[in-house]
Length: 199
Ligand code: IMP
Image (cartoon, rainbow, N blue to C red; front, side, top):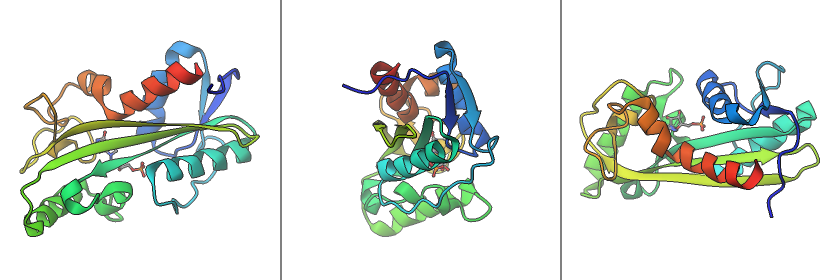
C-alpha cells in the first residue's frame, strides 16, 4: 500500500521551468501548493545513478531533506534499443552545453545509420519519485512506445519530440496538439500511476 500524500505543500525537485509548470498543472485538481526547488534556493544534485528511477530518487530525496517538505522529481529520456538504450539517462546531455536538441536528434540519426540496424523503434521513459523528509519514497515509471523518423517534423513540443511518432499515429510529438501529447505521454502514464496510488 503506497503512502498517501497528506500535506498541503510539495516541492518540485527541478529547476526546469517547463517541468515545474507541467507538474503544477497536473497537480492543480488536488489543492496542493507547489513550490520549486529553485524558489527555495535548493541546488540540483549531480545525476550520478545509472537508471531513470535511481536519478529520480536521488533528486527527490535531496530536495526533501533540504526543505523538510515532501518533494517530487521527474527523470526522463529517450531510449533507442538499436543503440543499446542510448541516449537514455543521458538524453539531456546529448544536446551538449547549449542543450541543442537539433544536434542531439542528428546524433541519434547518425548513430542509427552507423549501427547498421533497421530497427527504428524507440520509447520515452518518465520516472517520478515522491520522497518525504523521513526517507520514505514512492516511485512510478511511465512509458510511451513509438518509431523514429528522419528528418524531424513539427515544432510544438521539446527535446526529441520532432523525430518521435507514437505507436498508432502518423504524426510526431512535435506535430501533435500539446493536450493530445500530454494525454498519452510517458509523463502522463507515470502521473496517472502516482495520482492513483498517493492522492
Ligand atoms: P532530465 O531533465 O535529466 O530528466 O532530461 C530529460 C531529457 O529527456 C530532456 O532534456 C529531453 O531531451 C528528453 N525528454 C524527456 N521527455 C521528453 C518529451 O516528452 N519529449 C521530448 N524529449 C523528452
